Length: 173
Image (cartoon, rainbow, N blue to C red; front, side, top):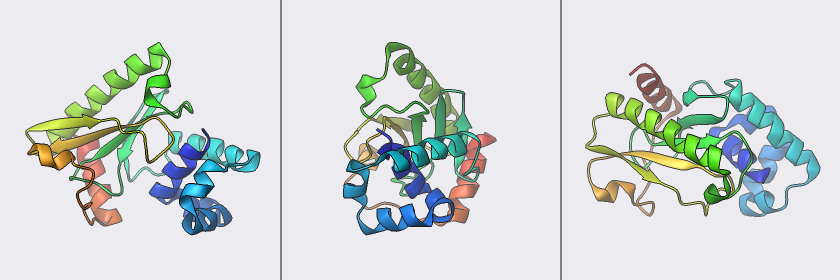
């Protein structure tokens, strides 16, 4: 399960600065690296979880509680595409214990309302896929049409500055 936060860190670019050796490993062989985490890397994932929860990537953060983080996806399907994750290491969304499962949905609802205030959309769509990253997470995607939530579509090409501005807009909405 520790691989999931390494994936999150990789996608957010945290490991580029935090652990160049691990970043090289992930760049070289992402999928194998996720599946073959050793105890040292599990400790790194734990420290990444701590850094994320302490705001190590504040530019992309949208909201946080003691149990959950919400941050922008760096490969969004739409402006404002946000990931909601539990801080607890759980691979499969439906393996979350009853309390966390209930609370993550309530937290996601609150984040979705923030997104709706900040990003013009008809609704915020919700998706739980669970195949790409082995850490329970929820996608919140601002929608104009049902095709906006098609994960086979090309992702938006956005800069770090654009993501940071969008996150700030959602945080202050």
